[in-house]
Amino acid sequence: MNVLDTLRLEGSLQSRGLRAAGRAEDADVALLNTCSVREKAAQKVLSRLGELKRAREEGGKPEVVGLCGCVAQQDGATLLARSPVLNFVLGPGRIGQLSAALDEVADGRRVSITGFPETEDYDSHLIARGTGARQYVTAIHGCNQHCTFCVVPYTRGHEKSRRMEEIVGEVRDLAAQGTKEVTLLGQTINAYRCPTTRADLGDLLGAVSAVEGLWCTQFITSHPAFFTDALIAKLARARRLGTYLHVPFQSGSSAVLKWMHRGYTREQYLELVAKLRDALPGVTLSTDVIVGFPGETEEDFSATLDLVSQVKFGQLYGFIYSPRPRTPAARYGEHVAREVASNRLARLFAAQSVIQLALNQALMAHRVEVLIDGPAKRGSGWWQGRGPDNRVVNVPAWKGINQGQLAPVTITGATPHALLGERVGDQGSAA
Image (cartoon, rainbow, N blue to C red; front, side, top):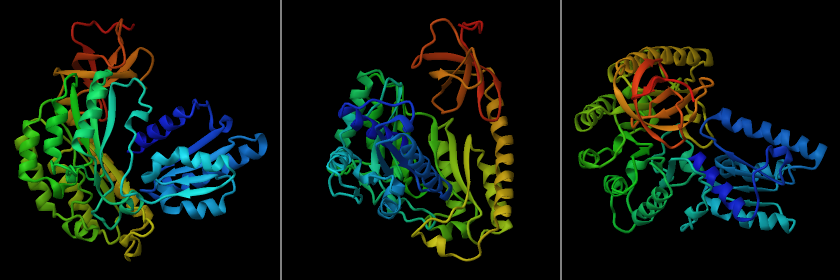
């Protein structure tokens, strides 16, 4: 969601005739698009503002500095008053008003534009998408769940779904321009309801996955409590639906889940996993986990490790609990010591690494279709892509390899975090 918001901001700047600068310190306009889900991300904002202040004092640039995103919504007015380098703040619900903010600055005013309007002109045609074959499309903004650890309802507002017709039209336009994979976005995307037809996520995916020219459709992020039997049945019928599904469980302890206000128990989550795997054979599940939540005991954490062992996730994103402003959990007692939480996170990653390696090794000699993204971090002569299950596949380059190309690949090797492959019919010679 932050990536797509950044592309919206970039597109708005381009519509005013601006072009990208090599560094913020050389720019006429510098925007910080911020996240406040975890404390560390928010702290980086203050550090970066200090760097930009020094750059302006030394060289006069950037001339205009704007703070955008969730930190702008959460602390923007305070930071505008405290930080002289800032010219404006713009909340995530007001991205469409970037041009108006710049006009205000041009007239000599410092402004704070936050909050969540009842209606919003999304201006999807202004998104600076580039030529990537994978694209994001927003389906629903905000969240109504108020999990006790989460700041999102306060920084991104409550749920507001886009019209299904509008979303499908945006996807059609992308497919016509060469997009092969579309990922629908929402903080709680399976709460989606079209405001005019009341169509749900299953109906939306059915319509999107039928768009000609698409190779694959994905969606993130799901909430376990919103997977109804009817929705699961619709997912099973959708064409071109990827085999990757992100279903955060956050904790394997029912007691901790209750403190988190997640709306399900450990047993209900495991029952959901069984239903999803029955309806979607071969699905690769990924998840989010928080360790060190206030009151989490060693027994609670052991329940998390046990759930991870049972489910065998293809990918896992783990985080140490971070208290956030306005959230109920920030006022909870029984805080877990940082060194204890760090140890638990390390143990979680170690257990998951063993699971991922085994799952990836089981794919040896399998043939998969991969969408090529570009040169790999692995080194010269290697390119990277992903299959419908979202696993990274590194392949030796071949003559004529291009970003956005679909290629049949045989899996030849595996690590915990990536697969190695070779194009079918290719001898692996570098381009």
